[in-house]
Image (cartoon, rainbow, N blue to C red; front, side, top):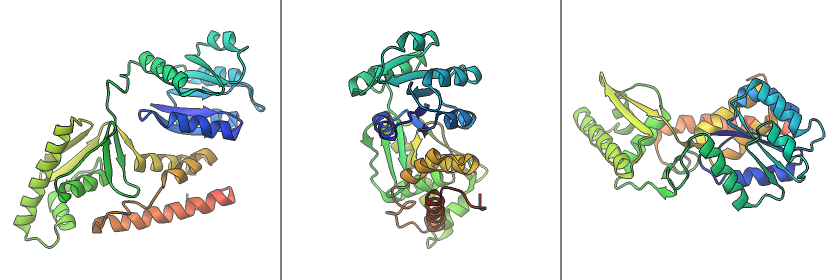
Length: 296
């Protein structure tokens, strides 16, 4: 579920973003200290829920909500404010909730549960969410449980499939990339065994969000749901390049905790690791300069 946060006080904005990061089904599409920028980028961020402060210098949260809902009526608005005198006005525009600062985690839990109920979503107790990490060590988490592998090659193959997500990959190319020193027939047997092991592992954990298909000597992986740090990074970086949104640039920079698959000794990952390292260096230069370069 995509969300945005708007609060013209940066420390409070960061605090709320940290609280909301505890909910794995929330994808932070933007953090803004400037409400006008949030309004301008609404078409790009397309949030399901907007968490808005009310008393802001450039544009108050009530008017901001009205202008947002005029073009995106399907969006829910939740006000987070230090003042209780706006509650009636807030609910007149169908705000889903109204939380007073300082935000208490247990109060936020109730608001999130209300959002999920309204949108027909299961609670965290009812639904496990898949999390995929590509920055640093490759890892999968289902709910709070780390997915464990009995052997290393199925784990590497799944990362390889994810790196080529939504693309058909020839089985002989996969063999060349993952088993370059094995005879062709042995490499194909290794591939079939590894695919079987991946499917069994996903089935044992009850993970249905990852689907692997095979046809005409090619494999295809589709990720239907889940939180993936690499996908979040790509989206945030693209949004920054397209809109000059400082919030999007900062989001991408913070997602890059370590290099792409930095802890994995996988030859096929080296070119992408170098490519992402270059992207990150350029991003940090652009952010420090407060602008983009002609490369976008």
